[in-house]
Amino acid sequence: MDSVSQILFHFALDLVSVCVLTFAVYYPRHRRRDLIPGYLALNVSLFALASALGRSGDKGGIALGFGLIGVLSIIGLRSESMQNEEIAYYFTALVLGLISGLPNVSLLLAAMLCTLPLAAVWIGGHPRLFARTLRALVTVDEAVTEPAAIESFVRERLGEPLSWKIQEVDYGRDLTVVDVRYRRAGTARHGGGPRLRAVVRPPRPRESPRGVRESPRDPPGESVPS
Image 1: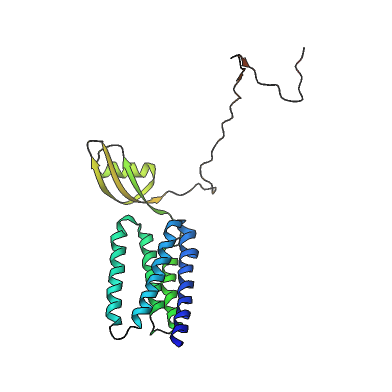
Image 2: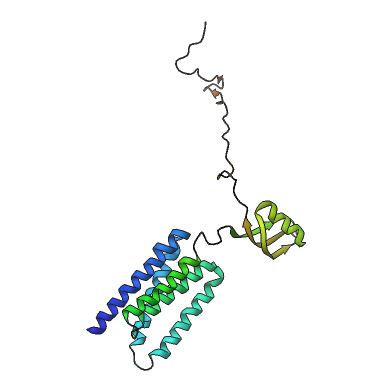
């Protein structure tokens, strides 16, 4: 009975930790709803795996190690289709489930250890941290490899280039794909970006059913002088 209550307390800690990671840190910043079930499923599954194998006897540590290798292999296979920020959240969800599921770690120590990766991912992925440094995948409509030409292209359209790497040069289609890290140019001094001007056009004359165009109606309240 004590082991069951211990598992429930640790599971409550795990749920609180992964919900803070997913709904308070990840989703407000990235707005990708499709990855939320993956984070939750990975975390809860790893918690169940660590809790079960940690209580299986002397061979629990070996089995737990093989299980973690399998989970890390799955994440490694999917890393090419995920962004670096998403991989960081996956690893954080994995670590939270592992720490909460270990039976030999006290609840207070597990809670303290869970705050470490949460604080790291919150600080490291904060939008105000290096907010002007951005990354873009630029397609140049010319097969060019000269560094001066690429830097001039990036500086003119994006901002100050920090680093860049040519990913593809296609001489047949006459294009170049460049992975660029750049610093966004500062905004205007008065605090506003470029303003949009609305262009007002006069209403077009309507056509009657017989194809005769009608002039626009006179505004209400005005009479046509005879």
